Length: 231
Image (cartoon, rainbow, N blue to C red; front, side, top):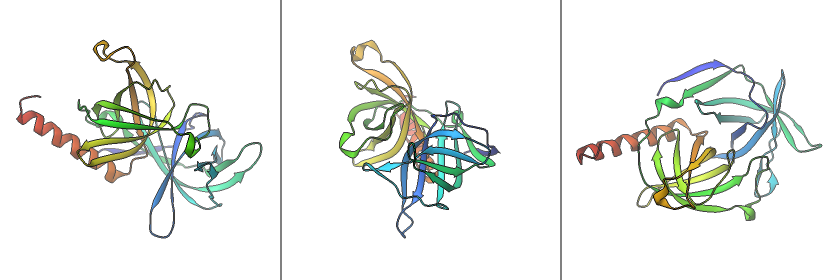
C-alpha cells in the first residue's frame, strides 16, 4: 500500500477527526470522535472528546494519533495535547504538525459484496458526540467494500458528515469494527423500495494492520468469485 509523507496544510473548520489515545498501561488504544474548531500557526483547536457523556481526561503532553479523510485520501499524524480551553465550550489545543501521512483512496480495491452491517450513530453534523443512551443503531447491507470504506444500503437516511461506528459481518461469527463518516447519500436501486438509500461511508483512522486485514479479505473474496466464474 503506497503511503507518502506530505506537508501539513490547514484543514477546514468542522472537519471530522478521529483521535486515538492510549488507555491504561497495557497498550490499549481508545478511539474518540472530534472535529476541528480552529487552526492557527501553533495549534489545531478541536472539540474536546467525550465518552459516555463525560469529557475524556487528556492532560497537556498526552500523545494523540489524529486521522481524517476526504474523498481523495486518508490522512494521519501523531501529535501532543498543547493545552485545554474550558470556555465558552471545552476544547483541546493540539500541536500543529509539519507533515502528515497521506494514503490515496484510489489504491484500495473496491469489491461488490453484500454483507450484513450495523451502523451506530456517534454524532450528527454540527453536534457534539451523543451520550451513550442517545445512540441510534441501524441495520443494512453493504453494496461494496474496500479498505477505505463501504457503500451501505439502509433505510436510515443519515446526512453527510454523520460519524458512525460500523460493524460489518465479513463471515459468520467474524465481524469488523470501524469508525466511519458518511460522505454521500444517494438513491438506492428502485427495486429495493422507496425507503432504502445508499450511504457512502469512509473509514476513519484504521491502523495499518486493520487496512491490511481488509485488503487481504477483499483479495480472498475476489479469488473465490473468480473460481466460481462470477468475476
